[in-house]
Image 1 (cartoon, each protein chain N blue to C red):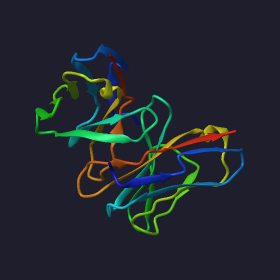
Image 2: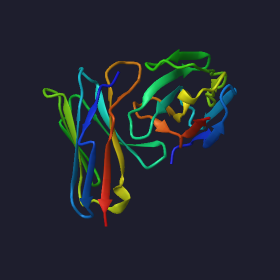
Image 3: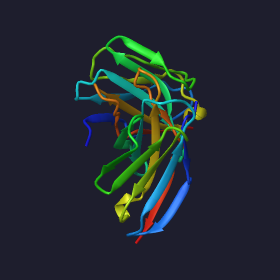
Length: 111
Length: 111
């Protein structure tokens, strides 16, 4: 089991609300990632970070933002949730190797 | 952008049989990885094969890589009910540890 945690696991929220999805890892990994995955589909990279104070947007256009103030913490924020944001959000981290370690995911439903 | 394409999209076999999944990709790669995702969960790394390797084994898993055909296969021998999951290939084409993912093969093992 990887030491990477995501909260909440499930979230149902109304349109227009601000939400923050939490991701923490205890492996001391420099690199962290946020992916969006619709059921049965491929993963799309929405944000990544190579270390503290480093954040970049991924291939998938996203209205979310991230921050990396501490090595172990990489939260993702949606300022105004919309039904189109309904999806599963996966956080991952990697160290010196190419292997990525994933959290259990957050399933988001925006009504 | 989607790099990998898995084939088949879904596979249903009897417990004890072997399962083979294929992955094709478009650009030159440094390595290719296979991950497993149980329903509604995060992904778990299975095996990594580098561009200069042709075959790799790990327990009941055997991975092959043909860089001339830009394809890889994952063989699971003596399948078990616990192998029921989606299997994704991911390629690493650059030096920034970003992975590009296929859409996955959904494997169902019937008891």
